[in-house]
Amino acid sequence: MSIEKKDTLFNNKIVLLALDMTYMDTLLIRYLDFLKEKIGIEQIYFYHNIWFNNEENGAAILSKLARPLEDILADKIEKLAEGHFDKDDYEIIVTKSKDSAQEIKRIQEIKKIDLSIFGKKVSVNDSGYIIERILHNKSASDLLIVPETAFYRLENVLVPIDFSSKSARALLKTISLKERINAHISCLHVFTIANIYFPYLPIKDLKEQTQEKAKEEWKKYKSKYLQDVEVPEISFSFHADMSVSRVIYERALKEDTDIIALPGDASIINSKLISLLKMDMHLPLLILN
Image 1 (cartoon, rainbow, N blue to C red):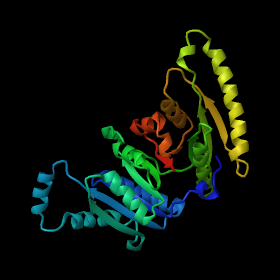
Image 2 (image 1 turned 90 degrees about the vertical axis):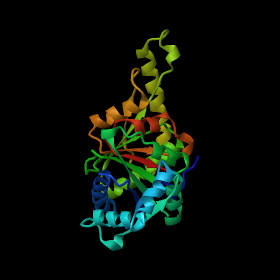
Image 3 (image 1 turned 45 degrees about the horizontal axis):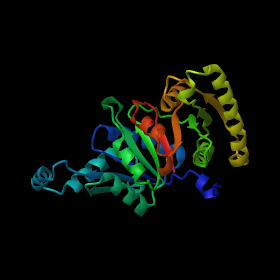
Image 4 (image 1 turned 30 degrees about the vertical axis):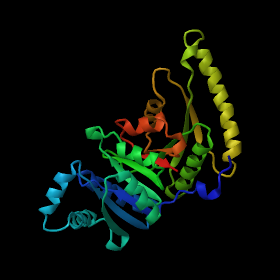
């Protein structure tokens, strides 16, 4: 599968920042302020969707307000943005919808969003459900998931790869981002061995054979997709007692990684990506279309 040049460029001119009207919003706005200077954001949309678990209770609450809730929330968002962004830099969008994920995709398409940013509350074990819904709806933009504990740093980026064209596209987009932020990129391939062989064959022999095969795949991968770019270094890893997502995260911590970049194509929304979303993870996750 060939990859078009336009699909290998990381675009970030138009950004949507999803807010939930909690303490997380202040942290996200500060992180966006850091990003704006780093990657050159031109237009920001602060977004919140109003929804109630119980529509009758919601209607009763709204009826008692002196002003529309949309206006009240817009004023609050504007105050949060003060000191970080000029009013010309952003627009505030507040909607009322039962389906936040679908509404976000609608806004992505209308406003031609390049990057949508969401917070993740590590302290309350945020499951990442809304992000999962957005992925299954085929997000119209790249996604950046920022935990509340994220550092303001973009020096080291880890890109897990599986030698597919989709992971190649994600790697090439990350390389195009690197050229702007002067970050160091490293790749990781986590290889697996079918459990059925464990009782019969020595793990050591299987591990060596599988790793050699992975190295051959890497050579083909570089020849096919990475001919015109500076090729990042790669590590190969296997742990019989750990999931692929846990191996990725442990490697990221060991290498002092600032962000993990993964492909987010709907056809490969698998356990690896979803597990990373659900983990108590303290690193931002960049999901690239």
